[in-house]
Image 1 (spheres, rainbow, N blue to C red):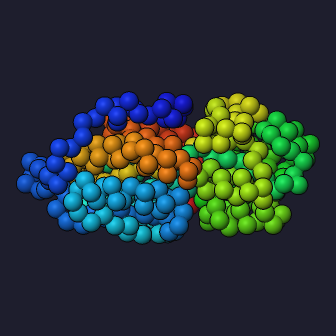
Image 2: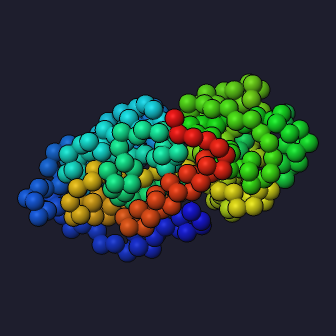
Image 3: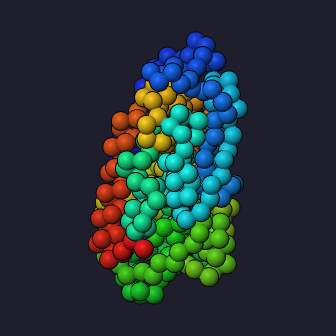
Length: 325
């Protein structure tokens, strides 16, 4: 997923016509109507994180358009797969929407027996925001940029450890492309990881900018680099890790999915409304503040991106010798 993700159809979203009557329900060939009741945005991660915060920015605007209550419905566990499975088994009418992250693409490389098929049981609706991951460190680490970090790792093979928020696949990818040996340390989330980096228990961490930006700006941790191919306006001071690990890219994305069988008209309505909402100036500003770059990507393009992401991380897992468990 290259820089095209960062410029996702902003022009398309801006040119999309506004709904003349937001209260009008979308009719389908089956006679269903959307929205016809409360819409549940299923969050598969702990409340208070980037996933939850991003969803809450969108909720009042979607409720205004749909003239229905839109609520957060947490289904947490097993690295986001509990929430994904819940929506996959829900009625395909648009009233249960999965709002998940890159973990969706990691799951096939991590779990041997997923209770759902990520390529067939859920329909990708749209990419909502993207946020490159960041490699950060305790202020005492004797490296301040990607090249210094790689030089340090090569001088101490296997001695440096890097904590990972949620999944270690991006760290394995970085180590392979940078040709270094590092120890990976799994964490359940960015919160516990930051505590250990600030406390000096682990020297390095990798997590989405949206999760760590405030702590880094406070000076309690320092940014080594961002895991995008180019600098990002979300944190322009940090150079890309690709300067020392050519081709390395690890972007945290957040997107919407609905159950397979949801009428195309409903999928289109959800996608079009989200594409408009994320371009509202106040919404865009707030999403930027929490470390997200708004998108609104067309459904077909997002589906291709999801498939590409799953294939990418499957290859990384295979190259690293990681087998699903």
